[in-house]
Image (cartoon, rainbow, N blue to C red):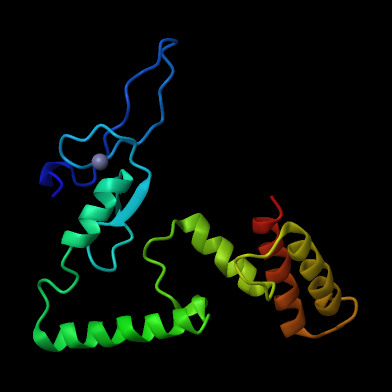
Length: 165
Ligand SMILES: [Zn+2]
């Protein structure tokens, strides 16, 4: 398990020959010097994450008792919730899947894709196409006085701002 005193204090790599900081996150597993590029939630429903190398992320996940510290009733509820998530996931209903392992950027991107009626595998061409169609459809000029359309138009533009790069 990770050292408790490393919580919240990611270790960073050393400095390069030219004294520029090497922005490489190291695996936070005690004694490991591999690159840590696998995020793992620090505790249940946490947005804070450890960064581990692949091997240690796997080990951490295996040893992590999801239900520890819960009463039997809570554990049962959590298990039901997990089951519902898993069902949604199997049914391709990924929007309802828990996003605890996503970064803020990833969550924003998913939300933006949802606004444009696209799934997470949408190509840039599809994003552009959907933006054009929806922007046209909800444009204030074609919906004078329609506040709902205006709101939708703004959302569509904001979503495209996030997705266009
Ligand atoms: Zn490691």
